[in-house]
Image 1 (cartoon, rainbow, N blue to C red):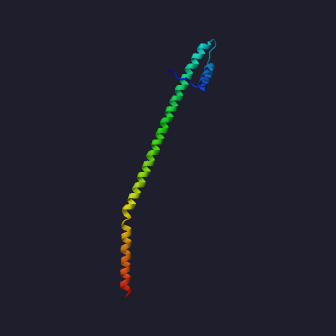
Image 2: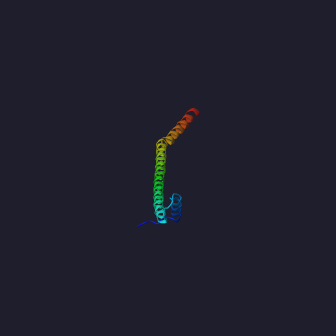
Image 3: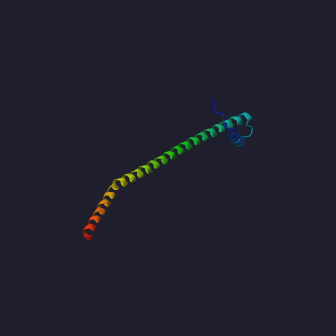
Length: 108
């Protein structure tokens, strides 16, 4: 099963083959050379597409990893805030009671 190359690829291959054509070379030979060049161009394009997919996949993984790290850091920040927060209301309540008792004792 052969994959048909695009018209653009075929035209590029034929142009290159004609550009390197030797004197006395038959049309069939030039056509075979053009087919070889066409195959090379197609393989190159496939390799570049594969590399592009791999780069995109790696980039997406890096973005996900960075996002996970950021979320974990935000979770740790929230956790540390909730640990210290319950003491604050009790501290304020105690200070207000001390202030009230002190005011009552000193006010008389």
